[in-house]
Length: 236
Image (tube, rainbow, N blue to C red; front, side):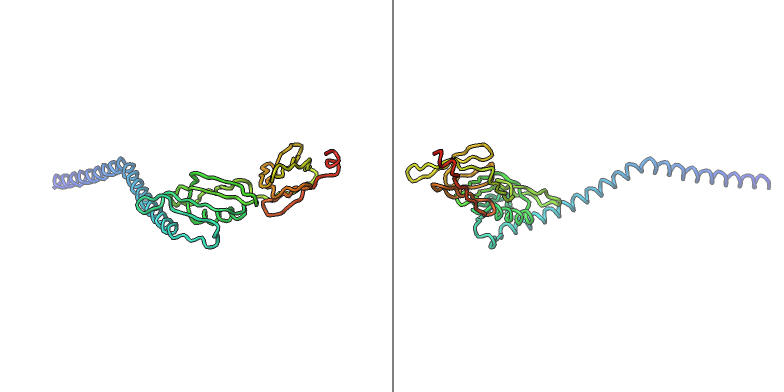
């Protein structure tokens, strides 16, 4: 009887130790594999997020392509635009050109950048005699992403010029054929100018030259008359 009880007790202890050992080994195995399983799960989650992001970006790119193809700038009739190149029916290059004031160009660029992701490829700016700017710009059409950077594509800073008369002197005027030229001094630097000349140092256009005065045009459309002084007239 005692032998039977001891035998049953031994079997119970052995069984209990075996179960504990199996559980311990299982826990050790799980602990050993956990970093790899966790990394695999993280990689899978990251892959799913990247795939979802790529799908969202592609949807935005397709929407941008449709909007660019159907773009009508009715509020700015002075500009023309064209899709210069495309791939798989998605525009890759876009160009615009027109003649307008700096303020009008700035407004157009703000409208464009609010809708489209563009990178400047080439630009040609020419100042016209009436103070406006002719521009021809070519863009690389990029993928739509958040937090896009603002770009300044203007040929000159957009700011109103404050005319300080003491900075200027009209020294003399000269007529050769049908062209009247003038010698100006601005902040002790002299410049020969004629109608349509662009004074980049001051951000002004020479709108007209007369025998006794020069008309200057600011970016905001304000005009200033620079008169020849009596002293310079007497010296001449």
